[in-house]
Length: 247
Length: 189
Image (cartoon, rainbow over all chains, first blue to last red; front, side, top):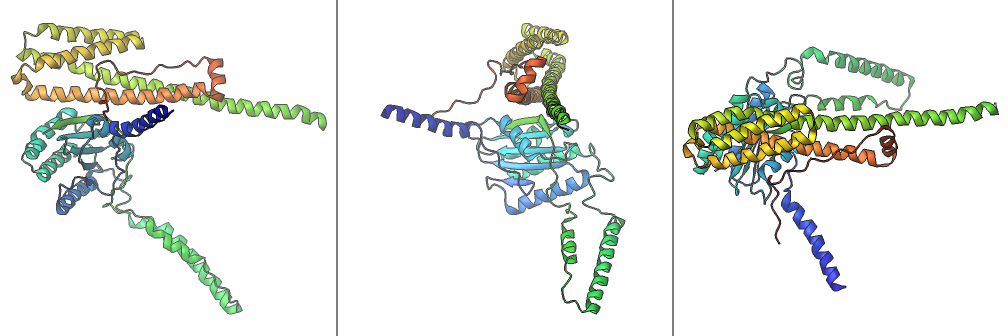
């Protein structure tokens, strides 16, 4: 009886230990474009990279994200990377114009994962030479920031131009033409006017019950224009394109 | 009035069943189509890899012409795969693709003996591309298996199973990873 219990216990432990060891959990999609779980980069370095990628996204709508993790804990780099890509969904929906630079510090491995939409501009061979020529020589010298910076610079140069920012769709959040607010203004104007009339009438008739419904409307307007600086979007699909390397 | 109800109620029930049946049937068809599309993606990736081979063979030849037998084998298996794919027989084309897999694996082992070739820029790019397509194959294979699992489940569980039998929806076999493919490491306590 005891043996059975021990066996079951071991079996259960086997389940709970074996599974995470095989498939390392992918972190949730972060707020920023550059995530360093290894504390390799300084705050300023992260900010500089963020800034670069944000500007690039504003110009091209292409999204590039960087993730540094300490170790794969026995998981396969390619598997982890595609699961990461499927979870984060970097890139715009429909354009699939995202790419991820994944660095595993203790394993000394890295991978550039390329979304479907960028495979033409950043083919596997090019991703491979970016890794070999730009990134790993610097990593070998311990210059992680310089390596990442050179890597994303090359990735940006490669993918520039493949997706030009469309004229109307997708950029709406950044530059609302002023007249697009006109219907809204009119609507609220009429509403406010009616409100005012109502109030006045109430006032004259001596009715003391307040008329307060109007206020709520104006407050909700603020959530409209998502600023271009945020790391929004998402929905890009990946199919395993890109290249891996080590240092 | 009563008579009308007696006629109407079964009619409504039959109507509801038929309309519900449409939905279930359509669900089965679209799940099947998804699996087919996923399979086509797998084949696309194999095609992509096959397209790389002539260039790869040429490059290797330039440095390692004496490795004729491996190179010829790769070329032969590539055209064999092309024929098998043309025939439309899934299991045949899969077998050919796996044969090509192992031949390419052998070629890559041979290549290790030629440092000059290994440091050739063109060859390195080809290797990246080859690895890339292999990774794509495994991604598409996993997606294929997911859609097949979904479909196979639909034809086995309750409302679907009635229609599956009626209209001849058959189980699709999963795409097992070939022997010698990269496996997840074993766990030790």
